[in-house]
Amino acid sequence: MKTAIVTGSTGGIGQAICRKLSEDGYYVIINYLHSEEKARQLAGEISGEALKFDVTDADEVEKVSRHIKADLLVNNAGISEIDLFTGISREKSRRIMDINLNGTLNCSRMFLPSMIHEKKGCIINVSSMWGEVGASCEVDYSASKAGIIGFTKALAKEVAPSGIRVNCVSPGFIMTEMNSRFTAEELDSIREEIPLGFFGRPEHVADTVSFLASDRAEYITGQVISVNGGMVI
Image (tube, rainbow, N blue to C red; front, side, top):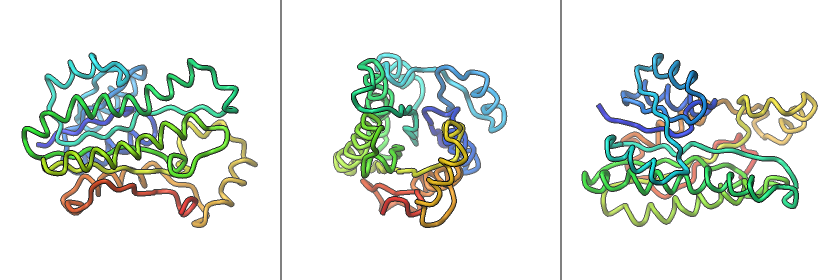
């Protein structure tokens, strides 16, 4: 059985990815940092394994990589913050970059050696449509997600000769708990900007991850697949 590691597994998108990969036959390692109860419930549901580690701590990730060899790594851990660029504290800015971008680099760097040794493997990074075009009042977040896109393209070129594919999923407005901060009026306004006329679901992202991880995508690497209902084209 192949092993998949999904970082940031306890959020709406992370849980959907874990469930879908389990359906696809993967033994799923469910990464968490704070939400232990959610992680253990999900692990019981899909017969996976809940594992606590901080993606921003390279030493901690390295320890995990010594004991777990991943066939598939999904770098999904991420946070966002809405505020003016000049209003974001240096601490919050560092935290956004550490989790979103450096966390992706840390996990990829530590789990890659075993993939290279086996001459096979797959890495899927989760960016955002704001990493593609930028968002006002989410400048640090946009920068971190744009970095993930650049990282995906560069790493894909580097590890392709080793039989490893690296791709990126770029979600648009996906209905998760994170969006509970928006009022009904704000949600209506956002929906009007989506050509397909409805909000995405976590399952839309999970299905895209599933495809990119499968043999059906064996000739796809270094690509950014947008899942946004046409909001960004």
